[in-house]
Length: 398
Figure 1 (tube, rainbow, N blue to C red):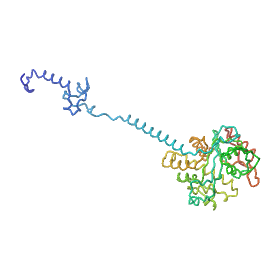
Figure 2 (cartoon, rainbow, N blue to C red):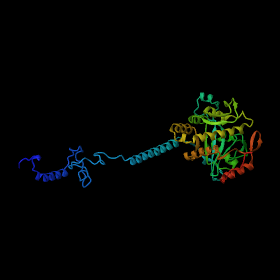
Figure 3 (tube, rainbow, N blue to C red):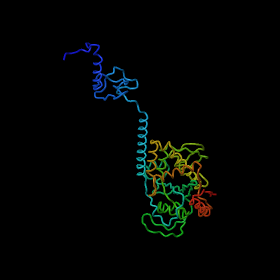
Figure 4 (tube, rainbow, N blue to C red):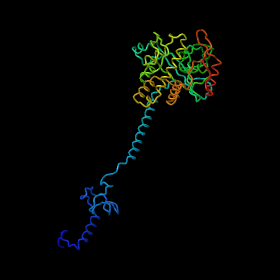
C-alpha cells in the first residue's frame, strides 16, 4: 500500500480519514499528547474527557474550565472532621494517661476496715481532713525556713469534717483541744483490742496514740457521724502545693504576727507562698481564742486553696496541673478506698464552701473542762442528724 500523507488526501476522502483517526484516538490514549500520566483512564461517554463536549482527547477542544487534569478539589469538610477526631483522641489519651499516673501516686495507707463499731451510713459523703506536723521529706534548711521545728514523729495540727451533700456542703473544724472520750478500739498494728475506760483526752491525742484509724474511731464515737474517707497532708506537702499553684490569693482582714509560726501579715488582699501559707494556718498564739481562731483561718485558707486549684486555669494547664498533682500526691495520705474521683469531689466541695454555696463553722462548744473545749451535745446531735439526712445545715456554732 503506498504511503499517503495526510495533506495529500483528496477532499472527498478527507471526512472518512478524520473519522478513522478520531476513532483511533478515542480507542487509545497514551497520555503523552496532553501531559497526562500514562495509563490514566479516559472519560467514557458524553461530558467525560474524550467524549463530546467534555474537552477531552482527540476532539481538538481545550479542557473544560470546571475540570483541571491531575488535580482534586480540596475537601475541607473531611479535613476538619479528621482534625477534630485527632484532637479528641489526643485529649482522651492524655486524660487516661494522667488518671493512671495520678492514681498510681496516691498513698492509700489508711485502712478504715480496722475501725470498729461504726455509725450507720448517711446520705452525704463525709471526709475527715487532717493536717499533720509531719516533717517527712524536709531538709534541715526546710525546717528552719518553714519554722516547723525538728520534733520526731507526727501529730495532728488541724482536723476538720467536710460533708459533701446535695443540700449544700458543710465544713466543720474540730479544735485539737476538744475534750473527747477514747473508746474501745483495735490497734492498727497489733490487732489487739483495747477496752475503753471512759478516759478523756484532747482530740489530737487519739492520733498520737494509734494513728489515723484511732482518730477516725474517736471522731465517730464522739459525734455519731460516719466518716467515709480520710485525707492527711504534712507540712512539706502543704507548702509545695501552694508553691506549685504559684501562691494562693486571699484577703486577710486584720494583720498579725507570731514568732513561733513565722507569721507576719498586714491586712488586705495578698498572695501567699508556701512558707507564708503554712505560717498562716499554724498561727494560734496571736489570737485570744487561740485554737478556735486558728481553725477559722485554716478553713478560710483551705477553701481558697481548693477554689484556685479546681479551676480551668489549673486543671487544663499541664504546666500547673502536673506540678500541683505531683506536689500533693507525693505527701497526701488517704484511705484505701479513696479514688481520684473522691479526691476531686472533696476539692470541689471545699471550693463551693468558699464560693458561698455551703456552710463553714467550728464544732459547737458549750464550755471547757481542764483547759479542753467541751462540745455542745445537743447542737452536735442535731448537726449530725441534718448531715446524715442530707438536710440543709441550720445549726450554728454559737
